[in-house]
Image (cartoon, rainbow, N blue to C red; front, side):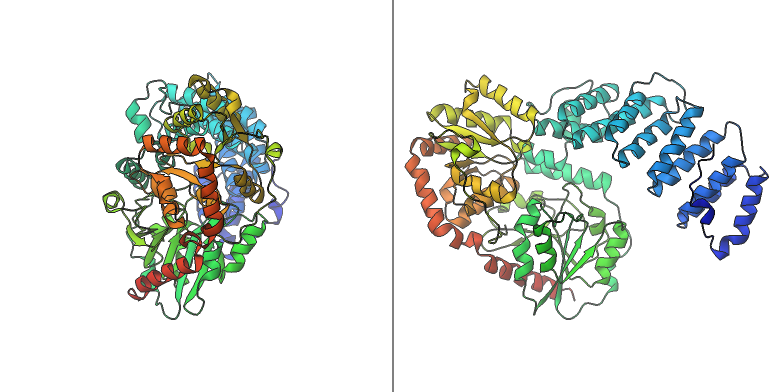
Amino acid sequence: MDIASPSMQTLSVPQALQPEWEQWMAACQARSLALPEVMSRANQLQADGHGELAAQLYQVWLDHSEGPMRLVALYNLGTVWAALSRHADAERVYRDALALKPDFLQARVNLGHQLEHQGRKDDALQTWREVADSDTTAEVLGTEPQEMRLHALKNMARLLEQERRFPEAEALMRRSLAIKPEQPDVLQHYVHIRQKQCAWPIYDPVGEVTPNQLLSNTSLLAMLSYSDDPALQLMVAQRFVAEKVAKIKAAPLHARVKREGRVRIGYLSGDLRMHAVGFLTPEIFELHDRSRFEVFAFCWSGDDGTAQQARIRTAMDHVIPLQGRTDEQAAQLIAAAGIDVLVDLQGLTSGARPDILAHRPAPVQVSYLGLPATSALPGVDWIIADRYVMPPEYLPYCTERPIYLQHCYQSSDRRRPVGATPTRAQVGLPEEGFVFCSFNNNHKYTQQMFDAWMRILAAVPGSVLWLLADNDKARENMLANAERMGVSADRLYFAPRAAPPDYLARFQLADLVLDTFPFNAGTTANDCLWMGTPILSLSGRSYISRMAGSLLHAVGLPELAVTSLADYERMAIQIGTHPARAQSYKRYLGEHGRSSPLFDMPALVRDMEAQFEQLALARR
């Protein structure tokens, strides 16, 4: 079968390669070039950026060769096409290999990837399912069939999780862990997917997996929701850095560039878009004093076409896209721009690129907003904080030094659009009764806090709890736990996700927001206070468990930041049984909230700039 791409015959060969290329073609046609030699030459062509030529070399060899080695050549050609993102070509090649050997599991796994890249997700799942259910014992290309089955299960679980088919994904993770408990990446996703479903207890035993394996392989994001122990948070961050972050021995890239003129601030993120970070930061970028500072965005945010993203980009002096660049290339761009202060808005959150920071492209590298915790990244020396979120007793568990802002660490946006206030009927709430609410992501909900919420509902007659419905399984589990606590299902109301302006408008129907713990509300707390709705928060030992408390102190309601679960329940019940008290908080926020230090963005930016300037000029 001729599976060559139509474009192959028109490829141009660099002049320096021409003599060798003609020899290789002649040798292939004469069947005198052995496959190992073809592989060596193709690998070098790929390394030199000539992937199309590597593919043609394999194809010409295939066109003139028969025998068992065709299987290897087809597999390698498939990997070349895949590396070139020629997914349809790769699919055809892998199918040709499978026609020769149907139990060639590596080719079938790779075929699934090519189908996924083409958007054929159900076909990809079915292809991987055939691998996972295969009973072949034949080893091909030195790979054990069991490893391929585990690889297929992992891919299926990953794709199902992305498609928010959480129960199916969890079932596959359980199946995989029952076969092989020592799979750190599967364990990490297993723990977090249970959090997303409010499947308590989170550390549910599976196979021969030990409790220590579950704990030590919990991701940092999942640990922030699970435990308020700063030592555990530091441990998982350090483990991630040790296992995943590049160890750069070369001199810092920033040392090669002379810095002069205005202080150059670079913001590094993949979330400068419709994202929590993208909602909180635009005014920082807009308010920077351009007579003293030049502002850069180094981002790998895809173009979402939203007004929010357009506003962020307009606020920058320079927007440098990093998509398609390696971490080292990205770091070189940052260094070449002469950045004095690089502000990492990502930390170790989803999509992070910590290896950029490991190259140290700026002399001052600062963590802010994206990860309200220590990242333990060796390239990050500072973290923006305030004295509430980072008290002295927290500092031993944080590898970064604090840059303390005067009032509150968190930025705000005073220009956020707000929709029309809905009626209770329009959002499905009853016309009467005190409305508690929590619009935090479901993975922040813990059994301890949910049980507390149920005790609060039981003690406040006629009250209801308005929650975010992230997924059907989370809703089902919350209703089951409410029943276990003796609370009727009709006391819980679930809100679907909504456009940001409509989501903000909803807060006006709530009487009191109940914060999550240990992962406090961040952007959500800012939103509800901006909309004039009070939030009751429990402050703990870690940065992330003190976020909402910091906001409450800055807005002038410190009494709503309590330090024990008993006080949290007591305060919620007192407010719920005395609705006039909630109305008093609302009046206060309506009259004074937006003029409080919490929303004084010019002051926050001046404070931040003064400290950035001092750090930058000291290193020039």
